[in-house]
Length: 284
Ligand SMILES: O=C(O)C(=O)C[C@]1(C(=O)O)C=C[C@@H](O)C=C1
Image (cartoon, rainbow, N blue to C red):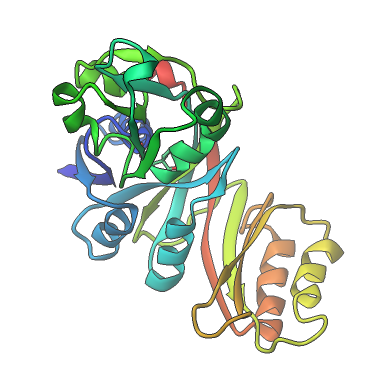
């Protein structure tokens, strides 16, 4: 048997590094082969798993500088079938890749919007007049670099090695402890781990509507580690709330909260209960 694992491509993305870490773990645990499948977008990566074309999808969910990866949250809410099996935290250290002899030659910088945002301060200080062009991933634009000395891209040092491209400056992220949390998702049923993630919409936009669900966690001493709101896209001012908390779904207190949440939410979706591991980026 061979496990198929989808991630954002082309090869050399941070998502691929996270996928390699999960593939290594999976191989070790099952002794089976694992094959990586690069996808054109994060939404497509998730759909591949939801449509059973792959066994796992590895997608970014949150960055320590820029916050949530909203396309991941929105797509998961829509798909409704994928469960988080594991969280992986990857250190992110961006480099400026270019064939330009010096920074003065650079006129255009490509990258994923998350990467551009994570280097915003550095770009303003060192390349204030360049055009910033968002791409589907940090590696999508690397193909243009070898033929145009005015072009640069923000990607990893690993990507520079894979594509045999020069690193002009490294590191360029605004905060040295930059890291991104990835989720490994599959159609497998809910598992049990140290953290749990869910999302809900509210039955009515009235005073106290959000307090009720939040009080259920507080009452049982369950610590929330993230709360994020996203528009329902049905009407202006209506939101879906994404919540992560530091407790396992196997605990009685969590089971009670989930039961009671049914009474004060409109739609409730539990994404999973999973453990978090930290990836050593030098090994991916
Ligand atoms: O473009 C990539 O290399 C990705 O893996 C995507 C992504 C993201 O969406 O957050 C992953 C990690 C970094 O935060 C920058 C970009």
